[in-house]
Image (cartoon, rainbow, N blue to C red; front, top):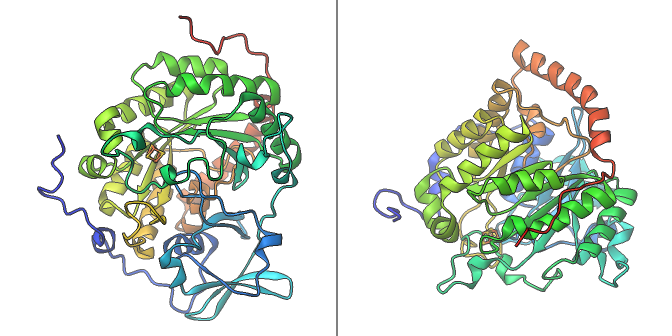
Length: 436
Ligand code: SF4
């Protein structure tokens, strides 16, 4: 039973009061990762000079509402950084950042000091306006999130159908069912879209995501994994509610899964219980941990992710989460909390930049200490999170970080032929249908 309320105050305001690093950026322009973090925290206003209807990808309201922003790319010397910037929420309307179109160039203007950051707006791919061979609009099957293809297998999540509802409190998925996407995806539609995304947008990674499917989650995903792996050829990732039936992970690996990620969101068990009532009641935090531990061991360093939200639980808990995830050899996938319109937590404050800087500096160090391979897989830029690779901009300048950087650059070279081989369509003999 949850003990929330006895010794933890869970209310708007908690994140802002948790830590204050005192870091500021008076007088110095931000580097691309710092700007990314600040944009996630503050959002951005859109100047009337912008022509986003013709220049940008449409704003998608799927995937727990996190993808509801505007995709931009911040160019940089180490790497370009992809960000899905909040633009619709109330806090974004108060932002010091404004996107303007100036002589054909998009620029993010920081109105505090007048800094101007040139950015790119990734265009909408041509296939978004086409239909599959079955006549389904392709953008209703999958969308680009950064440079990878995200497919929500089914946008009905069992947690929303309980009475009272057991949905995760930050999530708005239940409000969007049937609005932007086809409710349950057809395997042939998914193959058509994955093929178009691979051929026309250079997609290397197809990521399947799903809400709670009443413990059939991994079984439901199996046919999609096999179809994309054998008929299209791509790296395939899955983000599903976990199970303690670990043999089901073995089966998905046999069918072609390369990656698993586990959204357990909060390390602090009281925040987990209070803000994720469905995951607490019907799954349990330990199930997430066991599944992450099992698959990380099975697939090796950097192949699996623990996904958490920063800016809600105390920062110390987020740092513990990063240590736990990287200690397993897994990839820390850290979203900055976004108070999405319509979610129960809509009126919670967006996190403070200073707190998030502490989190992501720690993330870089944790990856370095645990030798987590960052930015090694080809062309996977995730716009919804601050990627571990983006935190290279936050690295202190010393021989340790230089050494890690050199190791990663060698790993990138070595990995290239391996990932090319992994992305070829592959004959799969394992059956996607479970024996009765
Ligand atoms: S599992 Fe939670 S975050 Fe995911 S769709 Fe269901 S309620 Fe939303």
